[in-house]
Image (cartoon, rainbow, N blue to C red; front, side, top):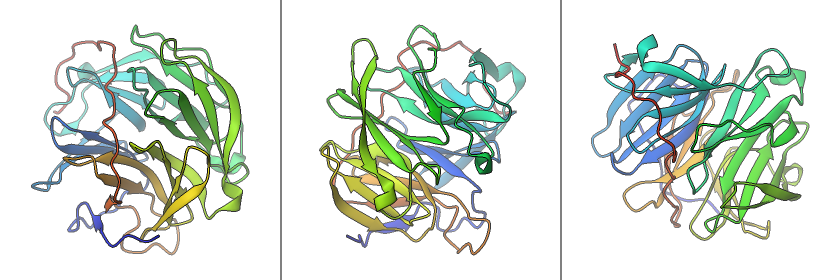
Length: 311
């Protein structure tokens, strides 16, 4: 299925993102945030007026959330950080505090895809940044409301991605988007404890175009995945059946998130390929997909009070 309502979020923006990722809608601001990983940048746009802001971090930031006060919880190269955003600009050292860091089992690792569950725990996975190595040193972690980083909860991941939670908080989804894997798994999820169990194959993306990159779950409980290298969004029912396909004007969609005033817009980031890029690759899109999503839960803990970040 192809939808006619696909628009560039910033149609006049000429500079594409190298690796646009982690879109997150903040309903209280009516604003979309996302990152460009190699540029070490966090971006913010209010679609109503097109205002754009950006912050440059001391290291690559891959995914993030906010706590109730508006402090950023960012998963970066060397760990999890609290960041207090202020005026756009470079993030000062005084506005940046490392909270926790895993013991990386290999060199050249960083965090990748992540988000909060509906109870406010932050989940994020790690990977070896050089995907050509096909290293399975990546793991999945959770960071609870008391500021405790878990031990690895899922091991053996090459390119961790696709993290999402069902509306009833009974199922967690996780993918590995590396070309050698291309699978999405489902887990039983205990909303009270945050425990995961009963890992099983949800979708084998080797049967479909593209690789299962970032994802979102809609209000009907269906799982939307960005088919990276496939140039489309694919929606799977809770039973794992493909029931909708949206062709996009980019080759490498990277992650999607619901937002807009009624949460009926799917915002999609993209990656600019190294060769044969078109004018849309590396930009962010707003897709009216005919369904509604759910708000993202903020981080349930209280992050440190820090001075504002912009300098």
